[in-house]
Image (cartoon, rainbow, N blue to C red):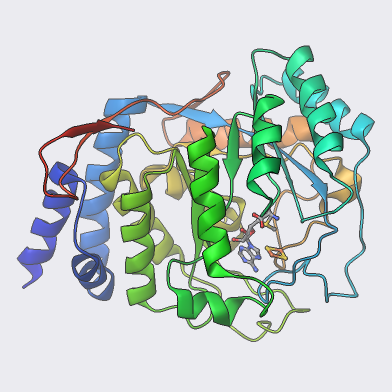
Length: 365
Ligand code: SAM
Ligand code: FES
């Protein structure tokens, strides 16, 4: 029985696809040796595509104001205890200046669904960043918007868009979100982003309340079929001022195993070792890299606002200046034999045999 599980990992490595039931079986029967086996394979695959390079993204948390009320999130609209802020255009541009000098070639503008950031405001901002730093990529992570809006931001120069699907299980989606939010709309947004031409990122939390291995298997199957350029995963961590305050955080072990499975499923995937992973374990990000991740996202936001972007309690990296954050991460990566590079860090093409439709066509993603 145990041997079968190792064979499933080998098959994922060769064919980049398993059935949802097979993914679920792997998650149900996770043991430390199985995780170690998957991680070793994932590291080999990752090295073949990306060597020992780790891509960095300068994360700028532009606003914690938003209309959404996701039950897990510390900056949800209903949290009256959250001290709200919005960065000015000048402040955002200053973060980019500082980031550029530190060697960042990707800026990620992330924030709540803040109605202040209209298409006009964002297009102006993106245009300024791209004309000052044409060698940099701009990634947006600003939630659900209309197709027209995504198109306008793309035309203004945005290169990538991160929108975690949160869960591929519609029933779980309902348990994590208020009535007003719709699973179908989120999926439609992701489809729109990809069709428009963004390098699109989806992703999910690990160990969210009510999540089962079956839902996680659905997430893996979704990523396999959607074929995003990037996939952000991190453990759920409770925030005291949310309805999920009493739930446990997701585990390091499960998150690392999922990172390895994602790497084997798609060797070219841009896969961050997230801040949430570094929050549940002091060496979480290093371990994420050793499980197959290849991206880190140091914080470039002004120190004055960092604590206010508190999605979950005990978030790390809220006290350091950007330069400190970058050099801390450089040291951490070097300690495990990897190096941060000054590069836009675009996804490298990788040929995947398309077995999903039973055809023998090769697809480049
Ligand atoms: N508004 C944008 C959006 O909806 O995509 C971007 C910001 S959102 C705050 C970033 C991500 O943080 C969410 O997609 C969610 O997966 C994650 N997140 C929120 N609350 C969390 C928690 N308590 N623990 C771990 N991750 C959390
Ligand atoms: Fe939805 Fe924060 S309100 S992720």
